[in-house]
Every structure is written in C-alpha cells, then in structure tokens.
Image 1 (cartoon, helix red, strand yellow):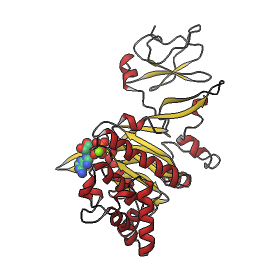
Image 2 (cartoon, rainbow, N blue to C red):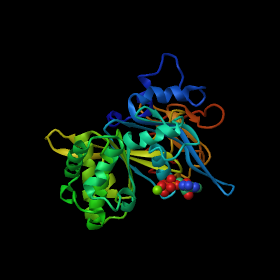
Image 3 (cartoon, rainbow, N blue to C red):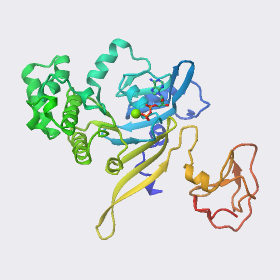
Image 4 (tube, rainbow, N blue to C red):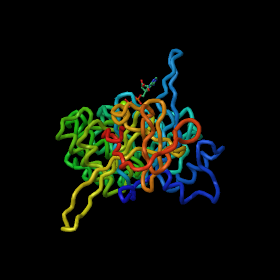
Length: 364
Ligand code: ADP
Ligand code: MG
C-alpha cells in the first residue's frame, strides 16, 4: 500500500499522539476535545465531527453532518462538491464568520467553538484570509489596489512606510504590481481577484480560505488567479483551502477533497513519480475517507453497480478488505466474511479468486 504513504489520515495523525491504551473511537467519552488539541498541534486545520444545523421557519437543515478534516501546514487543497453539500458553511466556520452547532474546529490553535466575539475580530484580521467569489465583496471600490492591500495592515497598526512597501511586494507577488494605483473599476475581474489575494495575505495569515474565487471569471483569468494562489502557497508557505467547481483547478493541486451531504466522502491525492527510466509522471489516486469510528463511504456508483443496500458482507484479507452485497449467497472465501451489521459472521468457502470492487466480477 505504498499509495497510502503520503496520506494524512486521521489515524496516522492521531497514532503518534495517542496515549498508551487510550481509545479514540465513537464510543470513547470526552475524547474529542483532547483529540483536536492533540492533532491541532500538527494540523493547521482540524475539524472533528463538525455539525452545523440551520433552523429557519421551523425547518432544520443539517449543512454539516459530522465532518472530519485535517489539513497540514503548507498544503494547497481543493474542496469540491455539489451545490448545497456544505462547502461554504465549512469555509464560513473556518473563517470565524459562523459558529458550529456541535463538534470541534480548530485553526492555527484557535478553538472556533469557544472563541469569544471580541477575539473573532482579531482572528479574522490576522489568522485567516478570506476570498469571496464576488470581486466586489473583496475590495473597497473607493480605494486603489495598493490602498486596499494596505488597509488590513493599517487596522493591525502597521506603520505607513511598512504598509506601502509590503502592499507593493504583495501585488508583485500575485502578478498585478502594475495595478497598484488603479481603482477596482479600472481593473478586470481577474485582476481584482488577484488584488483580493494580496488583501487576504496582508497580515500574514496562517490560512487562506477561498470560496469559488474563480467562479465568475473566464478561464484565462481563472488560471491567473489560481496561479497567484499557487505562488503565494509556494513562496509564503501559507496554507490554502479553495472551494472550486473548476476541474482544471482540482487537477493542479496535490490534494482534492470531496464533500457530500456535509461530510468528506473521498480524497484524490496527486503525486509525481519517477520510473526506472527517470521519466516523471503524475499519478492521481482516489481514496475513500475512513473516519475514526471506522466508517467508510462506498462510492455511489459502486453501490449502484452491485446493488448494495442496508448491509454488506466484509472479509479481512492479508492486505485488503472485501465487501459484498447481501443479495446473493455468501462469498466463497478462504477467510471468514463478517456481516457489517448484525451478529457474528458467515462461514466462507475456499477456492475463489479475489474480487475487484466495482467491476461486478465478485458476483457469483
Ligand atoms: P455549498 O456551498 O456546498 O453550495 P452551503 O454550505 O452554502 O453549500 O449550504 C449547505 C446547506 O445549508 C444547503 O442545503 C443550504 O441551503 C443550507 N444553508 C446554507 N446557509 C444557510 C442559511 N444561512 N440558512 C439556512 N440554510 C442554509
Ligand atoms: Mg457555496
């Protein structure tokens, strides 16, 4: 399982910090706070069973349904998912703009559930930078690009000369140094979004959060905005979490996480491998996310192809786990398959080849 080596799995991160004999599963009591505390030291973003319920006019919407997420310092991660899956809700919580209903969320050591209103302002000003989809929301229309970037530094009390030089440096970094003296109305949408990255980075935040920042741009401008984020990530080391619909963007990042119904469902990790001839190739591998209670989401198309419902049969093999629908006779296995739900296992029979999930060749 060399594919898994680079994976920042929750288990990997917790294993190093777990006290001997300490249990970390769904049934352990009072473990959540200490878990996030423990992993929060290694992960710049740590969410544990994060829940956000909106109640409007007596109707409850569960926008986040126990979301687990760990992001390490310096990662550039894309967040994808259907409309309404909870992406903006997650980003707003991480940005300190909204408060979770339950669970844990920690960013750069700040606990977002217990943070006081008075501390939120400082948090939003210097711990996180935020980029909205709508360019008009990111910039003051009556200030030049340089003044816009200098504004957060002014609020943080930085001296004028320092603000100016840093604003110009940031505008250069994101490729719009030539726009320094222009008003937003004199810039294209893509230029405004790159200035907005400068604004978001002004106070050297630990994390840059961007909610579909290229959603209103043509593909060339989108490329430039995303390029600016990559540069900021590479040169400043800022951790970036970007919500996007753009497959071009998600193809360019090392880690893409997919959110479904308010939880992380799958992750795609991309790595560059070098073969025996010295040829480099990009390899993308999709993973299902295993939560700390051992729950796993099986991709919808696998479930539909094999018509899985309600319960499945599991079998432990030396290097993998087999999963069968409960519609046919039990799988013939050398090992003993176990019902995922219910009592005990069902006896296996010997002499069958390994099935390949999703291909249907494991159906009798
Ligand atoms: P996404 O950004 O992935 O499209 P959102 O996080 O905006 O999804 O929304 C997730 C769910 O929460 C949706 O069903 C949405 O209708 C609901 N929702 C979002 N914001 C609010 C709100 N302020 N009040 C009520 N429901 C909301
Ligand atoms: Mg959204």
